Each structure stands twice: as C-alpha cells, then as structure tokens.
Length: 471
Image 1 (spheres, rainbow, N blue to C red):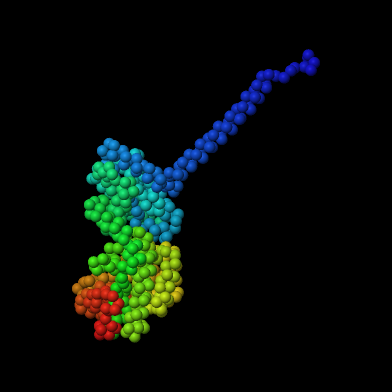
Image 2: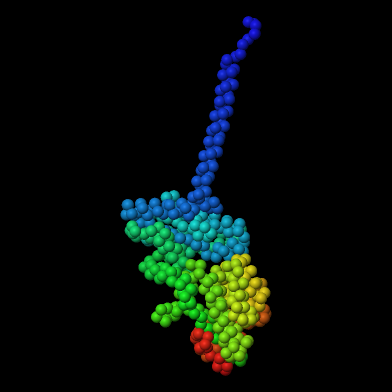
C-alpha cells in the first residue's frame, strides 16, 4: 500500500461489528421470546380448557386443594358448585357440534360475568362445569347458585335458533370441616347436582338427607358387582293382557335384587347406581338373558309359542356399541324367536339418543326384535319421531290411566294416542291398570292391551298364571 492510499477505516469496521452483534442479539431475543411463548402455551394448555378458556380439571383440583387448606388455616367456609346442562346432548345432536360449542362458550362467559375475579371457574369436560368460591356462607351460596342458573338460562345462541338450556346445580358447603378430602367434596356437589336433576329443580344443597343417600349409594355401588356375579338379581314378570280376548299375551320383565334376608330391592333404587357406575350394561345383559330363558320355559309349559316378553333399555345401554348384538344373542342362546322379544325405550331415552343408539334400534328391528315406546305422553312426543323410528308398540304412561275413568282430559289424551297409533299401525298398551273402571275405560277408548295390579303383580315366571286365567 503506497503512502498516498487510505488504510482500512477503523470506524467502519467497528460499525459493521456492532451491526453483526446487534443482529445476533435480536436473533437470540427472538428465539428466547419464542421459547417463552412455547413454554407459556404449554403451561396454559396443561391447566386451561381449550374451548372455553376456563380452568381444566388439573387446575380445578389444584385450586380446590389450596382453598381447603386455606379454609382450615383461617377458619373460612368454601362453597363448591357442580353444574350440568340439561338437554345439552339433544341440542348438540340436533343443531351440530359447532352450535354445542357456541353454547358452552356462552355458559363460560355467563359464569365469568356472574362470579368474582377471585373465584375459580372451570370446565370438567362435556357439559359439566365447576365453580369454587371461598369465604361465603350457605345463604349467599344458594343465592349465588340461583343467579348462576338464571345466567345460564338466559343464553340463547343464534346457531340453535335461540333455544338454550337449563343448568342443574349441586352445592356443597365445607361447614368448617378440616378432614374432608377434595374428592369427597366434589362427590358431595356431584350428588347434589344429580338430586337437583332428578327432582326437576335448578339447585340442590348437599345436606344430611343426601349424606345418608350418598352413603347408601356407596354401599350399593360396592355390592352391585357381587350381586351380578353371585346371581342375586332376579327377574319377575308382569302379565300383559289382550283387551279383546282377556288372554295373557306376554310379559314385561322387571328385575329385583334379592337381599340376604330374602327381601327384594326394587329397580328404582339400584338401577340409577348401575347407570352411574357403568354396570348397567351387565345388568341389562343379565335381564335379557333371564327374560328370554323364562319365556321359553313358560311357552313350553303352557304350549303357547305366541307369548312375548318385553325388556327395558336405559339410555346408557342404548348408547353402547353392540347393545343390539348382545340382546339378539341372549334370544338366540335361549332359543327364543326374535319377534317374541320387545325392547322398551322411553321417550326421554330417544330424545337423548345419539347415533349409536339409533343404530342399535335399527339393528334390533332388522333381526325381527320389536321396539316399544314406553311412558308415552310424558316426554317430548313427536309425530315425526314416531314415523322415523317405526315403533311397534306405544305404552301409555300410568299417569294418564290413573284418572281415566273420571277425567275427560285424560280420556281425550288416550283417545288421541290411540288414533295416532292407528295411523302408524302401532299397538297400544295401557300401563298401571288397578281398577275395573280403568280397565273398562281403556278398553272403550280402543287400547289393544293392558297391564297392572288388577291382573297380577310381577312375580317369578313359574308363579304367573296361565294364558286363559284372565278370561
């Protein structure tokens, strides 16, 4: 380099180096921010319900444990609210999952608007929500539950045509207990919620009556598997009588649980427990098998191969894949012709039924097993549903039969049901016949068959009267 030529500019080199370091620092900052975002998203996804943005089960459990610990330390009460949306499944199936999701987000927003910032609001999954409220007394908790119920009922999504739903809410109070396990606390609120739903009420507080009932349910839940395996569940049969010939044309199979002292536990006591514990499928399969075997024995004894037997199917049974196959197999193993078996489903079960249930009903009818719509008139009766499901039998609920001899409105309802059944060529059975006056009335109104205490109580099949004993 000659003396006249300029050398490297130290300032320019310094600027270039600074720019290089700045770009490197920006890249590192960007990578760090991305790593933090990923970590934050991962943390959020582990504690947040992705649909509603509420706390998920993990965060609910952690916050509940913390609240119970603080309550014990500072002698504060805690209220736990357990919410379930009535008829959500029907709305979801009718209007689609997007509409159902919109409704769930609406419920989440309603809860946020109703609760304090310090309260924990979470979604357990499906249509179940939970709210944890600290430092609140029982009267205020019940008033708050009422406001929550009102807020949920006010939600009218556009995607459902303005049709919303109602919440059943169970409330459990800590009441100063320091030994209550979080899982037991949740079970109390859950038990109260189910009690509210069964009573048709919006809110139910867990109290001493429910505590006793909860203990009884726990004992039933523990004993039921042994009852199934030890053959303690027995099937009794109530005759179904033709109203023209007065002959026994079949039976409804009703299960009982034989106790160690020989007494019988009625199904309304233990069937809900079987449904909640997931054992209803085992119970239903056992009843189907015994009912088919009993009818075959009765047919042979009385030389009456035309007799039928009806079994009841719960919504949870219908929603189980393979239900139709198990019922069909029970008939085949007993040697019972499929058209001598009737599966009874309630209107409520049909309304709640999903695609699996509808597939099961179609599968039953495809092999010749008939389907009866039970408790007709008490649910959401639909002419279109009758037409699309092609039921073989309508069973008129006993609430319409009880006063049919005296009340003109009940007579009008039964007259309309019989006329509707005639349009679709469906047989009508009147349930709960207890008096001669009721029998005369339903016969006059055109019912085809009837059952009830007037004819006979449900009994073991070998104690049931023969086909001509009601003439």
